[in-house]
Image (tube, rainbow, N blue to C red):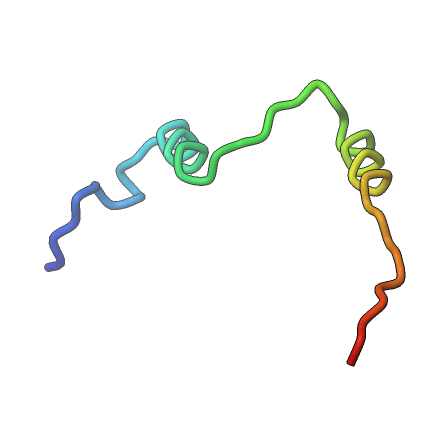
Length: 54
């Protein structure tokens, strides 16, 4: 039998599994919607031709 620091997943409640997942992976909370965040990201990108001397 393998020793583990946490009980097997079958003995952990769904709420506890969710809490642990969010603590591990983190979560993003924002007042902006996903579409608004995407728009901000796209507008903040700047493309330009580079002059590269070879």
